[in-house]
Image 1: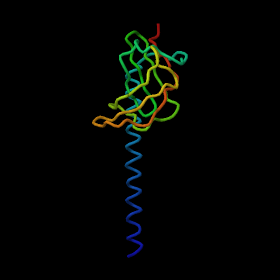
Image 2: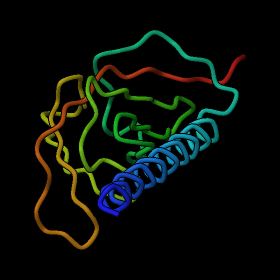
Image 3: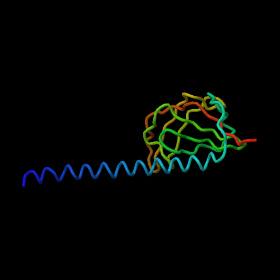
Image 4: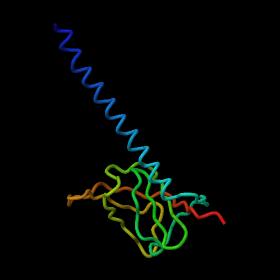
Amino acid sequence: MRNLLLAAPAALALAGCTASSEMQASQAAEAQKDLAAVLGDRVAGAPRDCISVTDSDGPQIIDDHTIVYKPLGRTVWRNDLGASCPGLRPYTTLIVEVHGSQLCRNDRFRVLDPGSSIPSAYCMFGKFTPYEKAK
């Protein structure tokens, strides 16, 4: 009987891991779908350190390490963070420290969850990769 009682928590823990890994896989698939929808048939260019803040209508958060700035023109800018940013997910708010008129690699930002007033720890942007429609 004692072995049966010990086996129950282990089985529950494994079930929790399975549910968690299924949820992570589902979130990753959704992020890839969102990214594909934004980039469409655009082609990647050479990554850059900075982009103009005025050339975009703001960020779209894809997942905890990918942010896309949609164009006012024809270029979509993808930023792959150097490390994942805890709490960064769609529908969170970015609090970005902008110095001048450009947003650059290693500029810092924080994440604010909906309904919260306490932002996350600092995260940093990576390089910005331009995606443009093929000519």
